[in-house]
Length: 469
Image 1 (cartoon, helix red, strand yellow):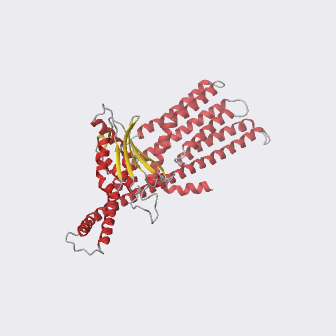
Image 2 (image 1 turned 60 degrees about the horizontal axis):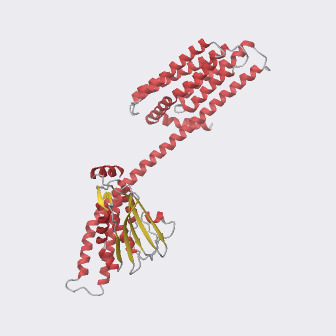
Image 3 (image 1 turned 90 degrees about the vertical axis):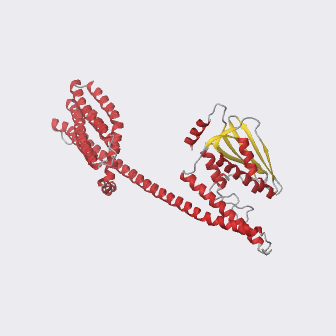
């Protein structure tokens, strides 16, 4: 009863255009895949029966079965270009499916009945088993359309009953005869086939409902991501312009060229300017994150010298390092260290790694940057002697809006987006980023790129990496 309730509950989706077309396409696709499998089993049955019965009759009926099966192949060929959006064509295909099902069901039933009629002895295990196999095959693979399945199984049921009654009509045995036992066993088999057919159909309905839920959830997720991206882009752009003016004004006031600013206000103005810079950095990170997630960040790949890239990044952070009183040392690769990448984005990556190393270093500490070749890879490593990172913090380190020290009293601030953006940029370069660290000793973040050889041309590099990105 529960299966029947599910069936009637699903009829609304069946009669809907989308539900019917989806079932038709599933039916045709599966029929095309399984037609030869069914033919092999039927041919094996024909060969086996022909060894003991009239071979000419058996193969004549099998030829009719094979021709009926070819109708499904022809229908699959005719319907392969149907996109599921033309309801008129869908109706025609459905009519052909019903017709083909009737022809195929009658042909297979006649084939099994012909075997039963030729058997002189009591009992018809061989034809009943073949018919049972065909019915189970239909229950397993024709559950997309209940009407078509019922039609085929109804034809098989008539054949079952005819074969079951064959010996009863021949011998008119008493009720205690084994012939009646076989008859009632056949009735039980029919009930079993009906039951498993409903189970398969119910499972197919559940799968359709789950797929529909997944599609709906996917659409809602895409809509939410689109709204989020638009919101971030709009808010970030709207905030960036006035914030730039505010920061510029605060910097002018803090400079106090005319020496008119009261001493008590200078620390307050300095705090406001620093917070303005942090807010500007957050906006830039949000814009980068939005572009990365939307696939809108442009990458211009070209051959780059890793030594030159590191030297430029270190020079750009020299002022920040000097302000913190931290020395930055470098160790360049003595051999060719050419890599492929986007210059501006990799400078952004190096700046993020260097600024993190500087922020988490102790006062008067040191940061060491080295470039080296490891097998066919170029590694750029940024090492500090700072606070270190606890074990098992990888998700927190590279996560969004997260920091290892997320307490209200942490030493350094930040958006929690820098390393996440860095990781995404590195992955777009088909490269890797990782770190090793020990609490109280320091951390080493490193990125690894494929090393370019002398034979790698600029065009090939650009095309291959652009495709990977």
